Image (cartoon, rainbow, N blue to C red; front, side, top):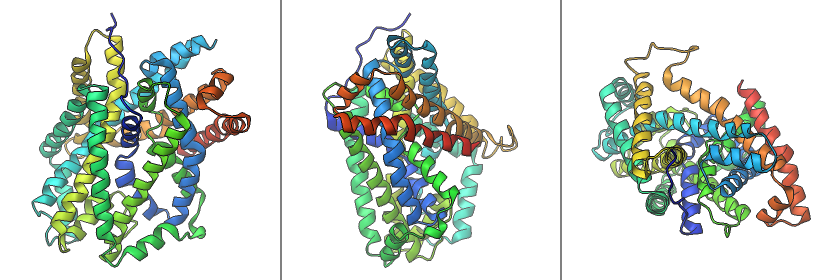
Length: 447
């Protein structure tokens, strides 16, 4: 039988904003966004990305919060019950299901990368990168990935931290951790940007980020910007529906979403100003791809004054960003188990955390002992990444925005968003056509 429990609530709007921003600000901002800028030609990508955030990211974020707040339950129950109340098929619950399953699968391999960040924090603090050249750092990273025992240890530590926070509940865990980690993340980022301003590469970094080269604006770059705008806000994972279910009626969804989007974007741009001045000042390649963080930057940290301190601060920042997102990925799964089983909060968190941890072992082994195990040409880590990012998340996000725009009562939506006739007309245009078409374009291009 289902467990009867008191549904958690955010104690303040600021706590909710920090938690939602913490979910959005993850490895995607600190790790992926800078290297995507590098690979996509700089400022042209940034400007298209900002446009996509406004036209697609923000409306889907609002839709997911609105659905969650109305349902006040886990994403699956919320979608099913709201559909029936609005005279629609209960099959809409599948949207909630794919979201929760997506969060479950993503956290299993995301925790592995979070473990890398934890490990590199310790290495940087111990001065392990001192004097290393490109080959040395590359070989060290390769040896780390080949060591299943080390990967397992750090994956376990990272998952234990995530489980520990979520087990304490909405206000005592998620909200309290966000109020601690997000300001700390902001301070660390501010310190690193401040250092970047002293390197001599800051002007080059600013031009790289904001002086657009429109000749590099290809269809592939536009699609990359569109895709990242969708994924950076933790959309399509059941997270924002779960967070919305803890939200009171007094919070203005559009204004709050605008705040979260601005904070998320500012942190992503600031990460660029923390990373690229160091890259340019040391003559490194800004288009180094995923290796920018774990191979390219350690070369710089190992060969600069105060490199040990700066490297430690940077990887601590990366760990904080990974942890705030991991907490949010675990939450919708725990909410579902807590509501659908007799398990209480702590037991539900420990159980789901253990299962996700076990699946994560398969991901980390794909870098070493199971490297030859392939499905449709992909190892386990890449298979989970591709399955979630290219299929499950776009479909879930598309389902959420279509449901909010076409299935919910229009008058009640207008009142809930606090919009006049003109504002609601714009909302209808964006939510019914612009955002869904954008997601469909991303989905088809990924195929």
